[in-house]
Amino acid sequence: MPVPYLAERLAEFVVGTHLEDLPPDTVEEARRRVVDYLGVAICGSARGELSRMALAVVRAMQGCPECQLVSVGEKAPAAWA
Image 1 (cartoon, rainbow, N blue to C red):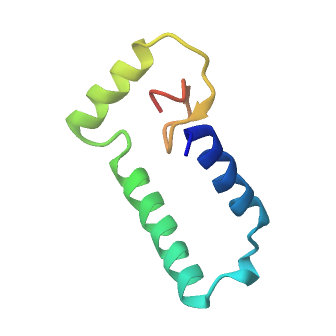
Image 2: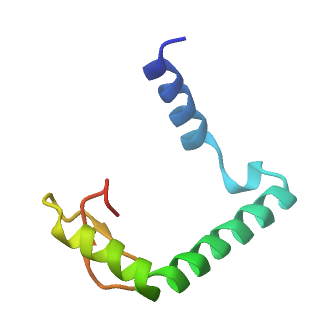
């Protein structure tokens, strides 16, 4: 199967799926994972030497500032965000 075909099928599935169509356990687990991701992203952003070094590299890159960096108040190109 060609990759664009798979991407189209996945997109159609996602667009056609409603929250009510999913089992409650699946919805709860997805919510837990999103909250976990946000907590880790906020906690890890701009804290510690490695985070500051990574942020300095992102700031030095050229490109369209299209994605918000979590808890920094800046935007960066999608590939670097």
